[in-house]
Image (tube, rainbow, N blue to C red):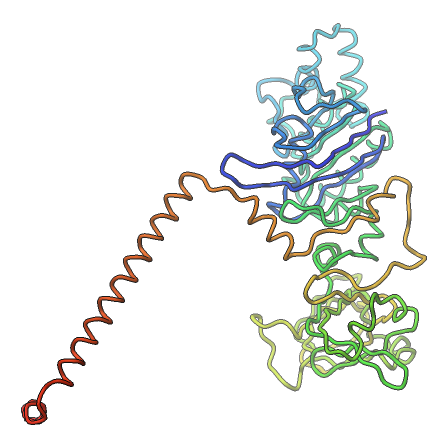
Length: 474
């Protein structure tokens, strides 16, 4: 068994910046966990704290039920694969893979057996006598993986191992790593900023933003049931279309969503019944954000004829033919405005058939799949739709499925409260305060001078004023 438990993990750097906030996660044995998020979200910092390369500011980390906060990295029985491979250039592939075992004084016979077994698993047996400079990027990455495999650790940690590879090689290495996980049957924790890697490899995915966990769930649940606006936009390629300042209205017992360009679509009853606190939004003018994925927007006539209440008209601005499909960038408010790269609030992306015939600047009909739309509160950005019976509940995610992330406003309060002043920050603040006081004194002095001039002018005799004006005119 090689499970991990992270309880209330926080990381604050000496500069006063807090990189990770209250990170809690129960990782089961043999899981493939992916930490995903944009740059600076705290995913690599979290992985380095698990590895022992970063000190945990507060919280508890357990590996196999053992508290390891103060355990040095070499005694945690973990292995880490770095982004830059970290191979010794003067050693052969064999020696690179065997180096860790030699340091542990493992017998030569066992070292030879483990290195050759790992090389066979990774398909690098023919390269054992080569040095890293004679290998391609993918082969070097396999050697780095092999160096961790021979140690037979409890946990594999992989920090963006594929980011230096080209697109084709990344795709093949994703498959190789997934096969390796299935073959070794141990716990993998993988960090990436690429949501395609996360969706294709992880049994569960942890989405992070600004040091906070946003959602922990299976790949399909993240796609179908995003808990907030950030997760919805981060998962999916191209990202979900968002129509802000939308409202819910009713007419003759039916519920509609009105959004940009004067458009309106009918909500199916199965969707309308899932809206949380519907009375708070229906016919009240309270704003929501409507979310529609590009693949849920259809151009084929059969779908349009079957969905007459979800049709919108849009002007085609850009066409991207990808072979298997075509992506079109459209302007919804085609009568009211010209398309702008600055203001894209009325634009959307749709995935349509590669056989569809469309031309630039055509006004075309598109229909939304209303059964798969998403709606979010405009202020909190949290979803306002309850999960339905299709939500996948797994034993590993019993607690994670109930997790509610902080709102953007709550995150900002916590970030500001956690920020501590460094000496440099204090010096800068004092400098700014002195500058502000000097500006106030200068403004007050200028105002006083103006008042004095006005008082002198008011006290002067009329004849003198007229004489001065006459002289000025002359």
